[in-house]
Image (cartoon, rainbow, N blue to C red; front, side):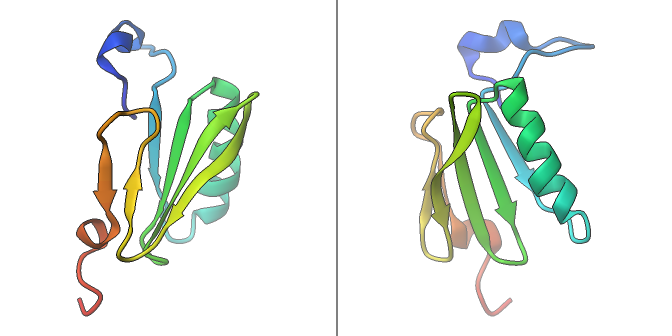
Length: 103
């Protein structure tokens, strides 16, 4: 979870307000919960941007919140650069994230 500096007041020791971005790394065998349940929960919580990182597929999907529902903002695979719409200047190369294909 990532909070922008102007929202640091949302961060608390026991409770926190919604982060600006959530990055979910899909766990093998837990995909339905990670993709379906959390997808709905994060939208209901009002989190503006949701990244789903799928190591097995070597892919990143980014969703933006619009009218309390997520819309896909991008899907990135090997050789592409995934960029946040919420965090200016935050991007990541799929190759850097997942490593070389031959590994």
